[in-house]
Length: 122
Image 1 (cartoon, one colour):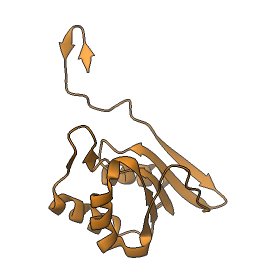
Image 2: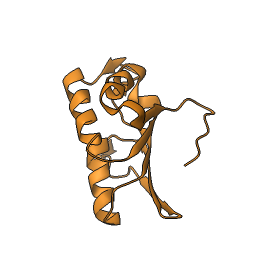
Image 3: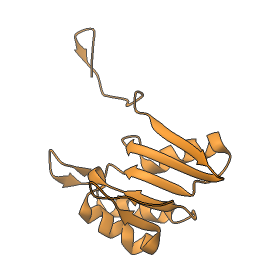
Image 4: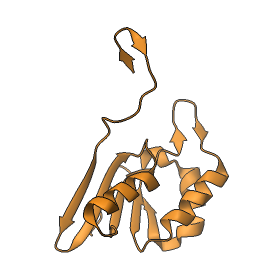
């Protein structure tokens, strides 16, 4: 990020997430969770004063440019944190298939991978 001809670390303060309450269901749509999906969930839960029924979005555990994943231990710990909730997760793109497989080991049927064109009924 460049401000006044100086490059600074991007804080991702511009990143937005969407909270939907529809027919009593709380849904969080996270684009590409640069600030961390567990951090985003915590902030959203504080706003709603409830847990989310569904979370949809990328978890930013894979960098397509460098082709590198976050550390397996970190991915596993994220899975344990997500599993504390009754939430159903739909993840995609920047989560990466290898990270998804690690998360799936912990979350079982609570997580699914979305590909382009996939439709889901909530």
